[in-house]
Image 1 (cartoon, one colour):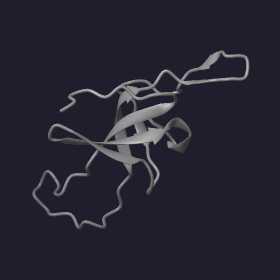
Image 2 (tube, one colour):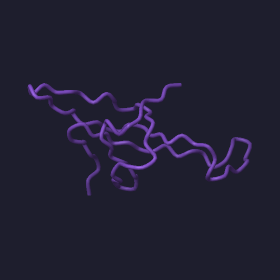
Image 3 (cartoon, helix red, strand yellow):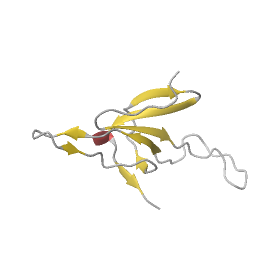
Image 4 (cartoon, one colour):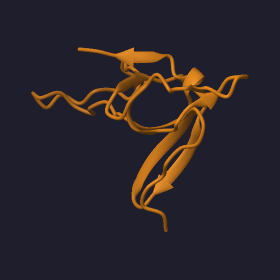
Length: 97
């Protein structure tokens, strides 16, 4: 079984960030509470090539927190962890604190 995946072209491997199920005070939060569909970039591909053969790099780097679409991406399981593989143009943006 593979332990590491290196995406091809302009694909980005993302580990989804799960929202907490309860607050620090111990109050249980409903499943449908407002949450941001976000994830952490685990690996990025080298990018695509333009007509002249120059590489167009992926705009994300490992460790970035990104905003994900509600649907899309390919589910990938490596070991016990679950990841999602997206094209870079499918990711909506980066999140900063």
